[in-house]
Amino acid sequence: MRKLFPLFLLLIFTVKVQAQNNEASLVSPLINQYQADETMLNRKYSLKRSEEYFKRMERFYATWQKQLKALPFNKLTVNERVDYLLLKRDILSDAAVLQQNYADFKTSIFTLPFANTLLDFEAKRRIGQQQDGKTAQQQFEQLQASIRKTAKAVENNELAVNPVQAFWAQQTINQYLTVFTEAYKFYDGYDPQFTKATKSVYPEVVDALKDYAAVLGKIAKPANVQDDGSGIIGNPIGRNALLSNLKDEMIAYTPEQIEAIAMREFAWCDAEMLKASQQMGFGNDWKKALEKVKTDYPELGKQPELVYELANEAINFVEKNKLIAIPAMAKEGWRMRMLSPQEQLFAPFFLGGESVLIAYPTEDMSEEAKMMTLRGNNRHFSRAVVFHELIPGHNLQYFMQSRYKPYRKVFSTPFWTEGWSLYWEMLLWDQNFPKSPEDKIGMLFWRMHRCARIIFSMNYHLGKWTPKQCIDFLVDRVGFERANAEAEVRRSFTGGYGPLYQIGYMLGGLQFRALHKELVQSGKMTNIQFHDRILRENNMPVEMVRALLTNQQLPENFSTRWKFAGNIK
Image (cartoon, rainbow, N blue to C red; front, side):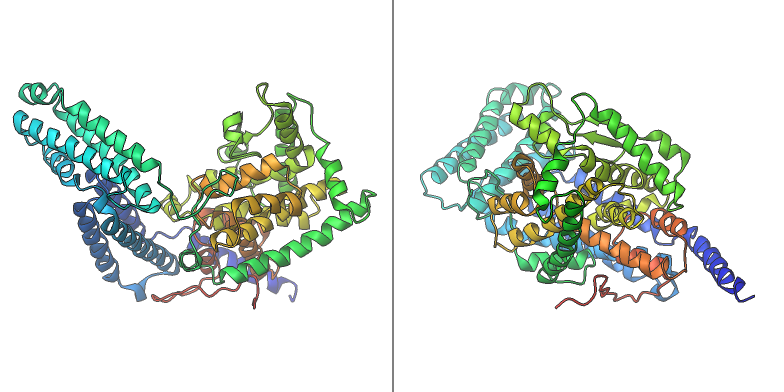
């Protein structure tokens, strides 16, 4: 009887979990409506840098805050409270971004004294109002003259514009140019009197806008930063912005504490790397062991076959060890393609999702570039990353996201997306997935890489390091090929990723690992139940996943507090 009691408790917990997992949410229609309404307004008001747009969106966010506040929060279920808090966070965050953009608009609109003419033309087009050809001709002539006068004033330093304002103005002109062109085509050829009167002057306005954008481009920079010789010009956001972003991601640590966590994890990697190096006969010279591992790459043309082999090896391993249940359609559906040389400038290794994207040499690469690509995508590095990108990593995530609570995809965060795949690197290490010291070094290289991403990202955004220092750190501390390190840093700071994206891997992985300890190692859930529930709840900050899995009754004024990595000084 004593042995049966824990099984009985597990059964009760499982039934409760399944019931919650299938629970509908009162808030989910509001999430869909909010996204649809916001998207519609952004389509309607195509000039995003205008007084009209800012005022309309201010009303929109204020209305939604009132609408959400009217819900009976105390009567909401755990599932609904999570949706409520995430929607509330997004509305407040979107409203804050709007206010920051509005402030930038107010301080930089002086660079576009001719803007009202463009705005008026677009506003009339929006409601289909016929525009008198001769009046439009006069307005266009005055417009192009005003644009050229402004451009000349900037060029001669008669109008003082700093690099950040110039960057803003250049972006805005490009936006205005797109909208102006579309608005003109709305009338051109359809209204003869308009077409005849404006046909010759319209191209002059377009050329004037392009010329002014070129003038601004000579002094424009996204931030007050200098090129350190790497050619990588990013936008370090500073400590206050980091703290704000961390709050939105529900991470209860400061940038300094996060770097301390990375250093702690790095120390573990160092110790394990030395063990593997010694097993390979290189003593404490782990870089020599790493060098040996890098030479074990398949011959040209063989990498896709290796990827297929490694993908199936990982699937068989997780199923054999009863770690996760993989739908048959997911195993059938994944694909592969090769990354182009241009793509490899930003992604020197594998990428993944619906397909696994393979980085490998092409005929038109230099011999040096070919060798760096071969070495950086050797058998043991690849063995550690294929399952990260495919199954049970990103491919399985995307498969499940499309099928279970897809409305939550709007809450997407790298701490869930990348953290999940990194967590599997940790779990498979613990499950003895690496078969040799070379395999261990392959896995450790990537985990050191995730630690390094935190360290160089924090130091860059705090203004302590330049991109070149970040590149050198990856080469010296992790053992990157230099070209791969340059691509990694370029991707991190100019590849369109958010400032917290690169820290999401390790921190998200640690969050999932802490949750696994809390629920699986304690015997409350099996591995399969735990992993299936996470995927079925879809993408969100991991602290919200924890709230769902532990059935927390979150308060309306919830603020993040989970110290998943322990107390850090």
